[in-house]
Image 1 (cartoon, helix red, strand yellow):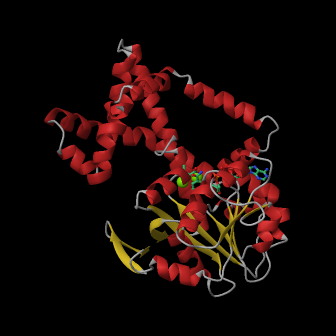
Image 2 (cartoon, protein in one colour; image 1 turned 180 degrees about the vertical axis):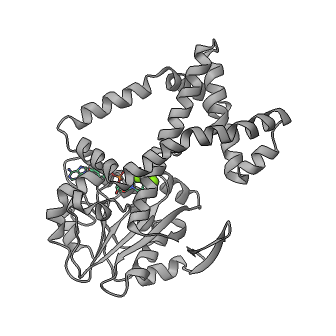
Image 3 (cartoon, protein in one colour; image 1 turned 45 degrees about the vertical axis):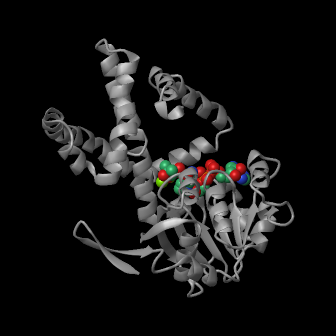
Length: 348
Ligand SMILES: NC(=O)c1ccc[n+]([C@@H]2O[C@H](COP(=O)([O-])OP(=O)(O)OC[C@H]3O[C@@H](n4cnc5c(N)ncnc54)[C@H](O)[C@@H]3O)[C@@H](O)[C@H]2O)c1
Ligand SMILES: CC(C)(O)[C@@H](O)C(=O)O
Ligand SMILES: [Mg+2]
Ligand SMILES: [Mg+2]
């Protein structure tokens, strides 16, 4: 494990150079990896593991769209594609990749197959951290490990196919066999991580829930909407408002920020932009900080987890979700976005 200096703080990271794929294959050569759930993370992790030469089977309820997708992806019923129960029985490492709410529902079933020496693998600290709310308490005689890609399952697969990798965090909650560390790092490399950084289950779920509600999606959608609506209310056209709020950010500036950092971006724009962006960033930081404090408190108290569990378990969950997604999809901003994307010269 390499110690790396991150802005003056030393952390443990594992790279593919020090834990090569061949070593990961060797560590897991006698294991059957059973992936329970074939939604978003399931396919990304399953296909990367399979392409990397690991012994992978899928457990997915049927009939379902996800079951059909597993077949389309080359998993064969009765050979590498099974019911959740059958896969859980055959697996020695069980990747629990149902939605966090479905994990609660299936737990009484899955628990029966967690015999001594097996490993239970999560991609989120949710189930274990909020155990009072999920009732997911693994038996003492199994390993409980986590590898959490820091991105969508779609990105995990795309980056793998592009010969790159997505970074993931890893954590060990229980090491019953003495092999948990090797097992989790080998799994992290197997699913296509570029490198792995160490965390624990609680820190993973607290940061993940904060990030997705914050700057990854919730806060950014909120700030986009606020600026777009303001420009529209002051007489700007949809094209102008969208280009100045979203398109320039995602197409032009964010790729440069990704390559070089915001410090470089600040140093490489007009002096006019530079002056204004230097003057305004702290106002935005100070205005949003209290909202982030509320958000983190809501995550740490378990309130966010409960909201998600409650909404997911309602009868009309899908109908209500569709209504909320429709509001976003049919908003002027994202309708304009579809037109703007259709005009991108890169479409030609
Ligand atoms: N979506 C992501 O990109 C992402 C990224 C990092 C971590 N994670 C974590 O990975 C795990 C899996 O998330 P996901 O987004 O891939 O899940 P998902 O919402 O796509 O669902 C996964 C599977 O659960 C099955 N399922 C749903 N309800 C069920 C039920 N009642 N009984 C049986 N099966 C049911 C679905 O058929 C689907 O195959 C979660 O812990 C999540 O937090 C997800
Ligand atoms: C892809 C995300 C947002 O990073 C993940 O955390 C999720 O829950 O889907
Ligand atoms: Mg998440
Ligand atoms: Mg995440």
